[in-house]
Image (cartoon, rainbow, N blue to C red; front, top):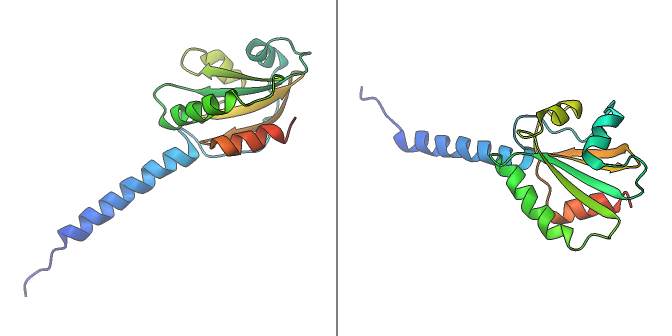
Length: 144
């Protein structure tokens, strides 16, 4: 009895698996699971080191990422597009986790891109993974 090989179906399966992996990186991010729960126990000195004055009334969007991370680069494009339309009291700060590992460690960064909204030295919310310009705009607006 001749054996039946299906090389075409193997190729299709491999391509589908690769696509799912790339889509996961794009939508979830690099190096970690998605967790949109507010960050807990971030030391005030770490926040002040990144944001500046702890008594600042402005809302600060802090984005942790790295140049080698594809989703981080995509979020950077979305933030750049968004930045010109943000109110004056909203600042955007980007932290490279490779250049500032001690700050990333204090913030408990395990997956990137990771973004925090901070006001008066307090973390209001955080997001992990890719977010579109409109998602970021709505997220920031909900804390203004």
